[in-house]
Length: 516
Image (tube, rainbow, N blue to C red; front, side):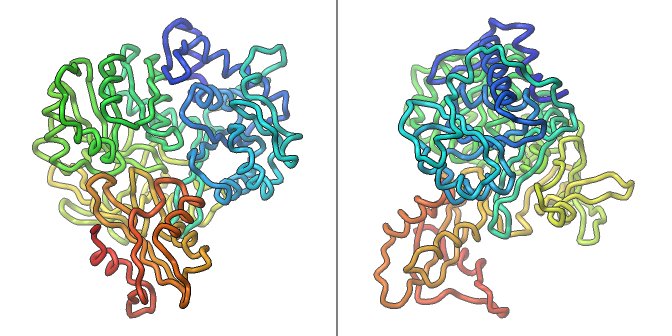
């Protein structure tokens, strides 16, 4: 099975069934399928070849969904970027994956012109929204996305993708500070989607509310799974909790994926009277563990709703889930491996350990990535043969199991942090802070936060004689980092603590850097 079939098959079997609800309107499977097919033909006519990468920089929308499936149908691989990604990082990703095409908006034309300067592979740019005057450097390779979605007589791809072909590259923070691309074949993504559909019991009768950006794979898979099952997906932006609650009631939502940040904001709502959530069948959580008090409160508000605690990582999408009936007995567990996946804990020699012993989590299954784009050494560290010669994923996450085999997350082996459910490399944030002319030293640590799970706190040593303010530095970070990577706190220091090796003592900063 290839991912493009998720939409294509649903559009063929029930074209009039509602597939997607967005601020733009309501879209049937037939309409979305036609948009994707038209864009596929436009891409092929524009020179896209099988295996070419197409970067997509859009907010959640019907255009984003149709673009993803259009790229897949044309035999290409999509690369979703967070809508808040800045020019510097865009340029890095365009060049790293050697993108041949880009889908974005006229509003981002200047940013794209800056980023495209370092990406000679970029041959075409498809722009959404109100047409405006474009920088001369990109005006010759741009076209209207709206027109590309209109039916055309141009031929589509001569043959569709195969299960082993590259479907997507998902860029995630790396411990070195540079983003690294996780490559997923169609078969990897289809296997992950089918397993999650299986344990959540998703059917064509479900209505999935997705408030997560599709550039976050947790958000992307809500659409993939919904279309695979022939369900309806509602795309919303989480701005006000009351609006989301009203949407759950109005759209008769049955499935609601959250991260701790969303649940924390939602639970601050004081009055739920007058709202009915009887149709809400399940809530899922991943990215970080839900606090026990959140679970208790969610069950009070949604008494008929099953709550699934889950664990996953970009390199394999999902690993495990905790059956709702186990929530009371094991509230801090992330459960057991999902269908068609094996997960176990090993010591430093790669040998399996028993219950209660902390070690590295290893995952085996068809959902495991193909590797890191252009990084053979990094790939070899993560993907290794097991005793039987099969390739398994060393996650870099520390786990333990209980006597019944349930998994418990302990921590990370590297310095990667989770903020708002997204991976953040402290080094990447530090590099941006160091880019300010008034900064002599900088270090970033994670501190506990009731809403974000982990908040970023920057410890900065200004250059002598330089008047540096928190506001100025925060604005600098906002100009160069995605929203979820901007530090919540900035503390000025005379010097940074060092360990015996002369390196910045991050654990000491984190211990003494609780949010104030």
